Amino acid sequence: MNNTIEQQETGIELMKTLAQKAWESSAFKEQLIKNPVATIEQVTGKNVTMLVDKRIVVEDQTDESLVYFNIPAKPNFDDLVLTEEQLETISGGTSMVCGAYVLGVAIGYAVCWALSD
Image (tube, rainbow, N blue to C red; front, top):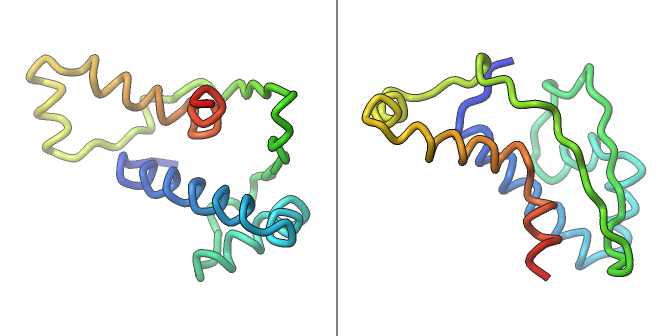
């Protein structure tokens, strides 16, 4: 599956929205934990067909006495699709910035949030 930077950014925004709703409503949090696909579809108003062959695990990580560490899948840069502008940026010598951005997306919003406390 090819993922564009824009799709990854959309995913990050969705994760933020889901976390915010879970913080605000214990009923929503329980629904998200028990049936994440249906809950995501309800929030987005779209069928989540890209997750048909995937299993989603939602963990309640609100206990501040615990620290969770998620080991993400190793980034597959072969599947990353870049726009013409992004390709020009890389060819101009800023590939390190783009690589750091992609790696940051792979690590995920949850780790950044946990470290910000």
